[in-house]
Image (tube, rainbow, N blue to C red; front, side, top):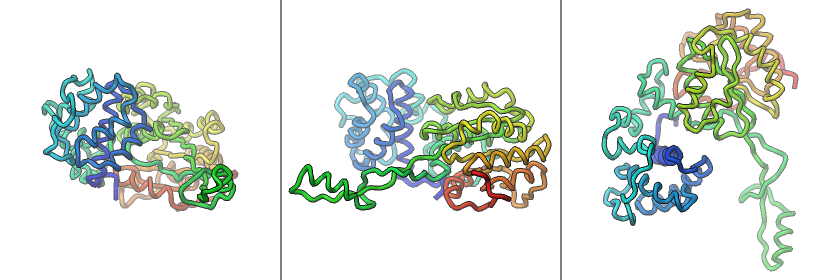
Length: 392
């Protein structure tokens, strides 16, 4: 199943995420941990009764008494006509429903205008809510999308999982399934000798460090924006993510991507990058990264996502040397190339030929389906061997 083909449950999960993000924009302290717990709570109670959904979201997203009134009014407005709820359950089932105004700035964030008053753009609202539109975008090239379709695609990209598998640490944690934990079982028996309750353990898993090197030259504008939306979501959910852009120079944009709102974060990146939409000097950018940043961020089996079309204006030999050095620093280099969308693609450009021997995977990045393939394909064994094994 691709990211664009959404089931009813997945669409509901996205609406819960939208509601939680809207609460955050309206001023409530809703972080990603609370959103994850809210999704589990909604899955447990179901959506057949409006008061059950209200209780599940209230228990997980409201952390203080003063947040209750804004939550109630936002809930009534956002879920008033939401598909998947019992249409016979009205706001009267909620005590005090409709007695509090929606917080300032919260209506637009929660999509209240589209659901309740119809003041928002109907075309954009229908695309955000209709799963058939999302399915239609699955194989569409980002360059061919309308502004509304592109906005929806960026929203879907932010929900994709990380592109690399978690690392298994040496330490153990208590688990419901896994290896039998003799020491933990004996400890439990020492505390309660009359009860034998076998304990189990499993290895701790943690996400590996991830570095995103994104080409922002003129030919990569739309693909760069999509990948920066993806990088923003990764930086918000993963502990060690470093993001850099390059055109004619290298720019670290991790600080600009730390904002809560993805659109504002991307605009902050665009303002911080002086060479956005210009030429491309991939070799010089990679050399600067190797010299200044590689030893800081490429530690602990770090993976690199290199997002570029490989069309370099510099020396191909210098690019090959810089790519080879990058491969020695990184545990894995995944090259995402929008030019692979063409069936007859051949590595004729000097930059493409210089990069290919030093990457582990070479994948397209032109559509939602290609990005969904990335999240699954990067977890498979290496498909494109390097010309020589890197020095670790």
